[in-house]
Length: 480
Ligand SMILES: Cc1cc2nc3c(=O)[nH]c(=O)nc-3n(C[C@H](O)[C@H](O)[C@H](O)COP(=O)(O)OP(=O)(O)OC[C@H]3O[C@@H](n4cnc5c(N)ncnc54)[C@H](O)[C@@H]3O)c2cc1C
Image (cartoon, rainbow, N blue to C red; front, side, top):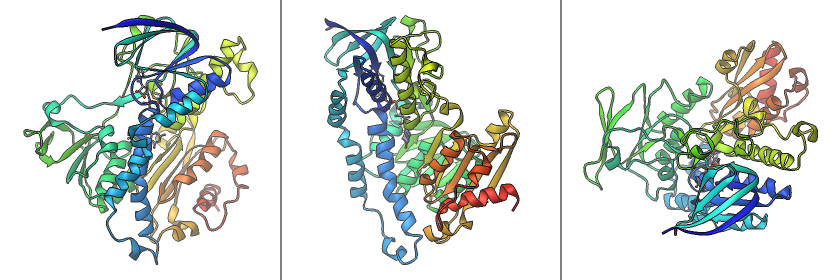
């Protein structure tokens, strides 16, 4: 039954309390705007419970053990198996045991009003929240509605899918048991990270990849080095194949996947890591002239094209599906909403350029937490060439610096920087190797800051650290 019990006006209404919605609310509140935030599941969103947090908690012991096994004097002490129960318990802690009390307290602390339930637009600046018990709250936004509803996993519509009960990223990050055999469909970030985790915990992993290799959005050598390591760890990686059917005849029995080359593979679980779709299908977009189920196209202040009071922030705008990038957009959208609410022209108010998410175009950093790690910022060589830049790719073996040899015996890794030859700045950097995730921010600073290479030459890396790769890259570029 539906009860219409309340209608309340706020300056800002945020739909979706993932990391991005929380940060929009924080910025709006900091600017003195009254703010309501609506959440249909757990406050904290995908990132906290089924994505970044649990996946990285699962990967940390796997990667730490692999690193330790490459250190003489330590290797012998870490040859044993991982303590699966402890790894899963650590993951459970990082996922806050799928309870959101901590994040509720944080939101209450900033003075945002929380509405539990599904939020839907019902017209310009109007949002109806339907709570699980059917109660409705009607919210009106004086200045802005921010859609921060994120994305969900896409699974292909294959014959047999319903009875096969496949894993998506949610099950892969929250599973309570290690499957004996796991098929991973997809060779992107989620696919390689989950293959790394479950393989290290004892699953026999088969990866099915439609394209030529893993991590297709990075420089080709990233996927090659990660594939090499996964194969050495026991994974069977099959490229150029597609799953065409799945079946699980007995609910508790194995699942069989059919391939387009006629082969069939039996496993205990099958993970589809085959992309993301926007959570906009049941959002009332049609009531404001937009298409349900679509990604929401925005300008650099995250304002939806053609709808000045509507903002779309985070995964849902499809600019960069990463928590840190969504939170960056949230800071910008929050500042833009506040400036417009106060009638202040955006460009005149802030020398930080804080009303335009320019880094989304030029300097998105990403770390893939596999063994080896793969990290990149900015453009790949292919992307830079497609964009029409006159560029040179400068490559170097990461094993060539003293820091990497100390980090791991038999260190394997590679670095590439993409130089814009007209401006002599960097357009992109990629590192692949153990322990390079923490190196990425140096590259992000160089790319976002458009630091001229003749200045970068004076940023002296400490000896003996892996960062000395910067010196080798610059020497290679200078030709000495
Ligand atoms: C396995 C995996 C690992 C990842 N690892 C990383 C990582 O290491 N680093 C990184 O930067 N990124 C990572 N990501 C990406 C990251 O999870 C997302 O970019 C991030 O969660 C996006 O935040 P968001 O707030 O836009 O959306 P979400 O986190 O998806 O939050 C959206 C919220 O909106 C709510 N919602 C949706 N519709 C409605 C509605 N109609 N009414 C009310 N509430 C609604 C949802 O319930 C949800 O709580 C990973 C993703 C996956 C799948």
